[in-house]
Image 1 (tube, rainbow, N blue to C red):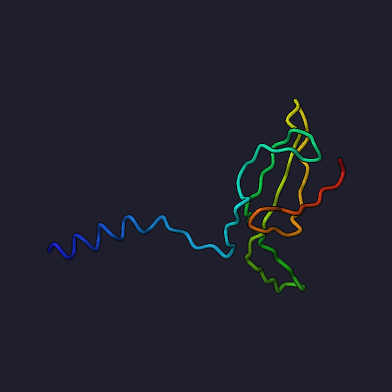
Image 2 (cartoon, rainbow, N blue to C red):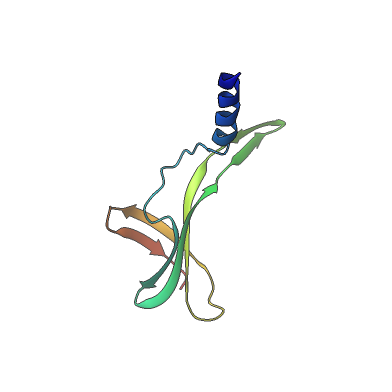
Amino acid sequence: MSKLLFILFFSIFCVPANASTVVSQWYFGRWSCLIDGRPSTMVWEVKNDSQQTCDGEVCSQTSGVKVVGWFREQQQNSPWVRLYSRGSTNTGLRMLYTGV
């Protein structure tokens, strides 16, 4: 009887664990930083990247994820601008942005 209770207890607390196809990076999350000398907020997240293609009545769907980033200056009503990661090390992040 005690063995059964232990298994049920263990199962309840293991359910929330989620698998991921993307390894978490040190820069994921929300940051207050300077971008080109301007006080900014930077955000990096993992997002769903499912895609569907159709050829006539035959469709196929792929499931995946992608890493996306944005920043905005910390002044009022500043727009969010898309960031593109160009690589990282354990102490730095290379990124590209356009349209600012």
